[in-house]
View 1 (cartoon, chains in turn yellow, green):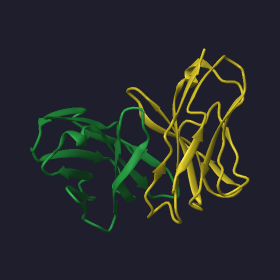
View 2: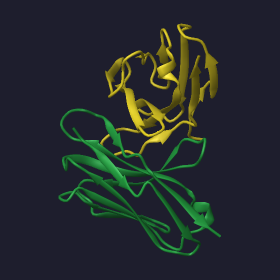
View 3: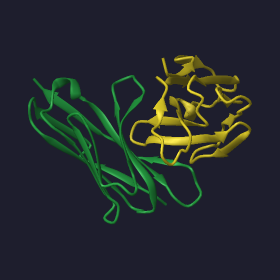
Length: 114
Length: 113
């Protein structure tokens, strides 16, 4: 089954404790992206990757890091989480060209930073 | 900077009604526009993707149109059902060398039995 898998789905952590949210897709997609969704602000793009070893900033990259060492994985790293990073996070991927392909989303990871 | 607006923010209709959801965008230089559905606590599901050269796309009871020059798209849902209740989001992929998708804040649809 084609899918985008995120882990963990739910996480409560404390300020400053490094964490990684993993994202994996089994569709051999080239483009992958991370979004955060906040009430009243909608979905905002954090980082995206056009292919292995190619990443770029979205609209709200501050406080986040990403890496793309393999095509299927695109982890989101919070080196020193802060309460303003409490949010619902989504990973997405698309086949081939991002200009023509539809986006496939993971189920989301709800992160709370105390 | 591209801005995507969806009005209304919420809509409640009786079952069986045909309805239209609206999406407007400020910069017409786009590659495509997508409509998504999001159920509570779930991820987004792509409903329809319209390329900039297209005027509309259809899937079952859904029809999406695109008027790039006026910066508008509509999602038409025929014969609405309670199972259609969800939040519907539109998003545009900008031209100009930045592979970023810009989302509207969505319209929360409730279809009452």
